[in-house]
Each structure stands twice: as structure tokens, then as C-alpha cells.
Image (cartoon, rainbow, N blue to C red; front, side):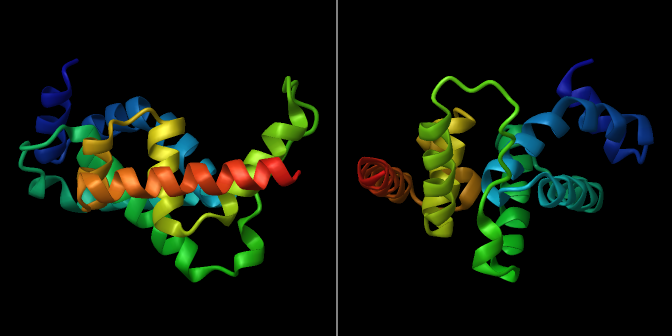
Length: 167
């Protein structure tokens, strides 16, 4: 089913449309939430809150941007709000030592480093390096200029590089 058809179902109040949206986008949102928030419980909460907001606001989706950009914008706002509300000590990522990761120490250092980034840098870096969004799309998602996105990504990379070199 085409994305536009699914959105049309949602606008009519059809729960099937929301189920299809959830099936299509829950996993990428959960992945982003995990990278932003650092633990699966908060990431799952963020996905649920995002879909509640989508349910309430689907009528406001104008279609001038891609639906995924609109959806990720909502999701990133939810994640950033959650980050503001919690204590800094809770921002360390969950780490599963049982999963086979080639450079485990490097991966752990990177996760910890990403968690220390300021919120906007972290959001830009995660959307760019992990989720693969273009810088212009990140600007649309976060509501900031593309130049600002580039600067945040650059500073995040510099900070991570220096943190990893110290490890």
C-alpha cells in the first residue's frame, strides 16, 4: 500500500492506517530513540508518544515535506523533551555485552561519547551518522538551518574524535 493511501486512511480515522504506519515506522523510530535516549524503555516510550502525537495531528500534515520527515520531526521533539526532563546520569546507553560487536571497546566509547554531546549536536549526529538523513532533511526535522546542522555534525565529530583518542 502506498504511503499516501495509508495517510488517507489515517485522516479518515481508520485504525488500519495507523497500524500500517506503526508497522512501517516503529522500528526506525525505536532505533533513533535508542540512540538518542540510551535505553530501550525510554525509546519505546518515545515511539508510543510519537504515535499518539501523530494520531492527534495527522490532519495537520500538509504533504509539503515527506511524511517521514514530518514523523521524525515529531519523534525528535519527543526525544529532546524526554532528555530535558531526566537527570544527566541516566543518559548512558544500555550496553549488551553478549552481542557480538567487532570493536566492542570502540563501540562502547562511541556510545558513551554520543551520550555526552549537547542535545542538538546529538540529534544532528544521530540523524546523520546513524539514521542516514541528509543534512537538509535534518534541518527540516529539527527546524534549524542546514548550516547549523553542518556545524553541529562537525562539532560532534570533533568532540567524539577527541574523546575516543583519550580512551
